[in-house]
Length: 403
Image (cartoon, rainbow, N blue to C red):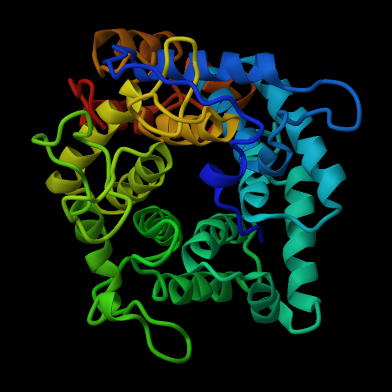
């Protein structure tokens, strides 16, 4: 598990470019394709580092995850080839001992496979979790040995590990989840990424089990930090919304503070904070729809889209200032794909008659996993266009530019 402060260590290899803040006016599908095209263009395709994005060789997992997400939406063969080339690089360079973002990337590659239950990506994940479970010290020992001095960074990677562990139904999946909660209970404003860690934890917890009213945020042994006293799983969505920047903050509305304490000197508007916070809110909303979460997601979506350069470049800040990194682009793809509304079949940001036409045109078709989910008319992705897809469409009728 890496302990890397991205913003501080890569500046020696990346040029710092400053752009004025402006509204991109992009739709979700347009932003996704623009970013993915740029990443596809920058990928190394030959040599030892084929499949990587120079000079960010240590962050291939997050970028591959983004390209796999883009392919899931666009069914672009170029994106598929790019993500699979990156996946092959992960398998070769990691030799079976994966970082958290790499496990999540392999999970997405497996889901994109023509047979999600029988493919090399899934096999690699199963082998990884089995090896960890059977290693000296077991899963808990592996996590402990992989942890560093910053609990928020631990949380970021553990969130990815948890999602992939549940995907392959690893024997120790609950241990991974419990350790994620334990590391979260040690996060406060002395950590590198407090709000980002909160978002990542909520993302993983919401997708792998109940965010209930009884389970406290505390370690498996010892005591949590004061910030988490009396906090339960069910408090996390509201807590995360409380860290969103409101409309009276210039050039930052919809983004997130990076610290829990919002002093006049507090900084906000960082791209990764917004990405992982929105992933958390989106997952919580999917698990239990709530009007306040919906409103926060809509605001965050606007801020995220404004952070995408017309050329498909993504920067450290949503104001398009600071370091430009491919890892930001990969993570941005992951969240933008999550924000496509159910029922928005054509990806134009609206659920309307054009989407209904596509459903009608493909009505009754099967084997949709072979044809880009029947041009996305197979909304629930069960392999055919049928009544459940129409019900999802009707439930989201006229939803516009929202989540």
